[in-house]
Length: 234
Image (cartoon, rainbow, N blue to C red; front, side):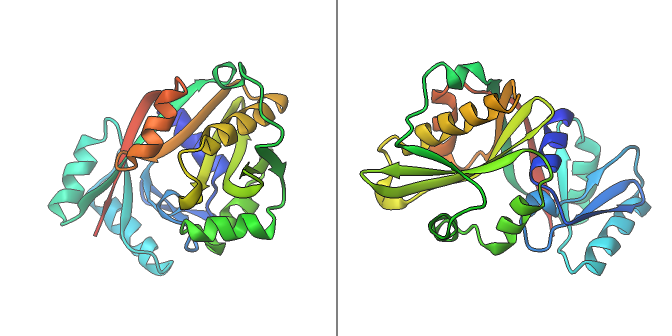
């Protein structure tokens, strides 16, 4: 699980990372929970939680912590402080060969970087605005965006980047009127073929448990849940 969080930090990076007691507090600049939640770096005390809260306040961020598997004591301590649990996340992973066994359709998925205006519009439609585009632009690893097409129409978009030998997909969005036509699968395969060509051997993605459609998609592609985490916020 720790390895996948490191991949997440590399492929979906915060603007900065600040030490606060036994915690690291990322500076998200509006890029969402993944780049804003504090994480424990080792044994912690209540004073360390206070330090993390002060750092988040100084950054203009709400109190937010990421709870990994095995961090039950931290989970309980935050609950006692009035933090509520939210957004359980599944970590999916598979050998990249499982996705590249079938060829990518060159007319259904296009590798494009930097993103075109139509791609930015599609992301905006899915609530992925300029702050999250900035996260993509910050990634210093091999990266690209994928534009999906259905019936000569821009149907979907995703971002993929590589850390070490693992590629991670982020920000997958399919236009509501063009769903259930296979575009998500074709985008995934295009992303996997690109990643394999750039040295990746594994493919991963993080998704909330509540996103039933995405969970079904990843399971249908023989990806397996290899870890879980959740957030606590005030």
